[in-house]
Image 1 (cartoon, rainbow, N blue to C red):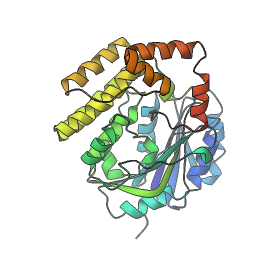
Image 2 (cartoon, rainbow, N blue to C red):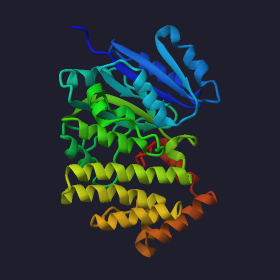
Image 3 (cartoon, rainbow, N blue to C red):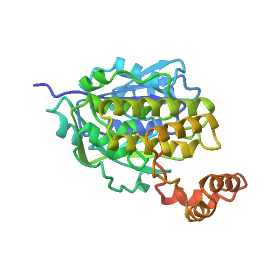
Image 4 (spheres, one colour):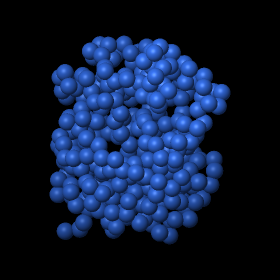
Length: 336
């Protein structure tokens, strides 16, 4: 029997600084039966030229106009032939045996999705520190989503997963209306289309953070609307499967986390998220911050504390804390 092919799908936009390292990570996977497809989404830099240089090593370049990350993901999926799919952002890297470990767990289970470990880095993958999470174990899809969302900080980034093609087809395409946290909606559907989530110890994603141009760092009106829509779609999908107190709490927690983020950034999105949290029964999640923020929160409330924090950052007082975060703090789970 011919071993199954894994398609590594990489959407890329103005990624000339990182795409070479990402491709080396993909090419270096110990699973030998793979194809690598990069969709250049209308880059204005040397991304396509760099990718084309990997063609002799088996990397396929597909070029399209700038239609957005979700459109690039969908194009890559249409072009691929693998029985399994590994999505990979153009600035992230994988451990060498990531795919092999996951294939060993789900290769004989076409209805199972494989998950793995993740950690963030800023300059080099060697900075990454992997801290075990509650969902780093075998779980049913609903149990995984409730466990990950409860507390408000789910990490559903694309490269964590290895997805059988049949599950991806059942889940449907990436929603091309979305930009910010598009993976929240998509992988909620993927997990709910699967029978089981199999955790793979040692299958690692090295997640690059701190890029000013990343989707996770963009906070335009359109980006906030995308985040709101993705959250609405994802939470609605879970509640359609299980509308229980624990599921409502998990949905309220993740919505509350983003309501905190939207406050002072987009009043309409904040109000809509806050209203939805109230309908779900409220959330006990507190806004996160350092020692000074927590003191202010207790003294004057989180809204005033966030206003003061924003003022301090705008006047340069937050540079030290941001430097500390870059040097080793995990911080919030960025979603891009």
